[in-house]
Amino acid sequence: MTVRELVSCCYDKIIIYTNLDDTLTSYKDLYKGDRDNIPSDLIDLPVRCYGAKRKGVLDISVIKPL
Image (cartoon, rainbow, N blue to C red):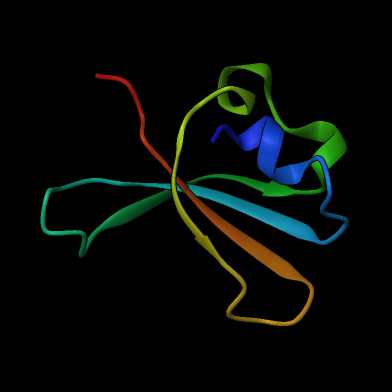
């Protein structure tokens, strides 16, 4: 699944992030905002996982190409 496919039915605030190491303990936010302004270099990245820890916010972890 890509970010584009996931956010097509989402109207919440979106946070896209990626892991910085293989232990999944460090991460970097790549984007925060609404679905209409997601940068083109992020919109077609594959989704590793997603969740909604807080009301009104969708967290998306992406697999960033090397």
